[in-house]
Image 1: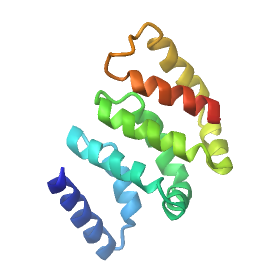
Image 2 (image 1 turned 60 degrees about the vertical axis):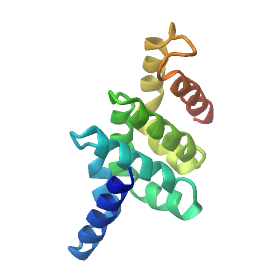
Image 3 (image 1 turned 30 degrees about the horizontal axis):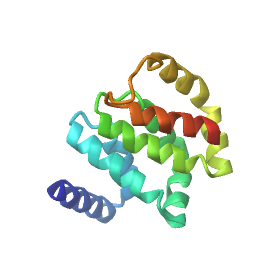
Length: 140
């Protein structure tokens, strides 16, 4: 995990030196075919929602970030999904972010996910994501 963070930091620094926005680069990592890369990217994005400055940076990138986050709701990796749900819950506290998410059809996606998991036991993998899904729906 530390090694991946070092790699992510190195790539972000290299991107910045080449004139590429590190957040744009980070958003691209969310679609990487390697689970470990997606997991680390989702963790970094989620971490950015922990500060006002980080939230502002992510909201500025809503046009490219939000569709990618919504796609990751269906990621095969539970950790990626957990980070994405946490990110969306935090972003949904901002009115502008809510409007952007609603315009992308987030509610039908959430309802679909809830229907898919309606018989899931509390101890099954991803059951915590259902709580975050309900919290996201409530925020919207």
